[in-house]
Length: 179
Image (cartoon, rainbow, N blue to C red):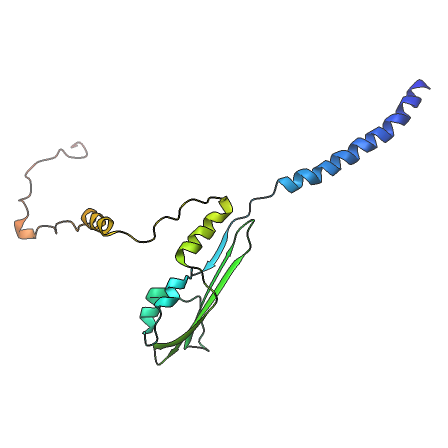
């Protein structure tokens, strides 16, 4: 009889503990979120690239500036579409679009969304991390270009066969013993 009286008060207490524990799970779950990878699709498009486009440019020159188009339709052969999307955890998705129109193989016009500059785009990449540091320079100085050219000088061309040293007469032992 004594045990029966102890079990009755424990049941509501156990139920209360279970409810509180499950309620705590939702709080903990809101703190811990799964990692979501960054999803980058298309070409990075900046204001400077679009400003470099001039009517009369051939397709090859436009491709050199903008990269290969994401959409080039056989039904619209005189139109290239450049689309860029970036989805990052904790940030609003970025989406930009540029359409380039050709006639007879040369650029006639382009239509573009509001695009960030290169510096603004680089700064937006670090915004998630909360870093407010200085954006690195996006152009090399004359001294840096000179140092780069010196480090990457082409090697001397190989000697022609007539100037090559005579083959060595060194004898090597056989790989397998004679039988």
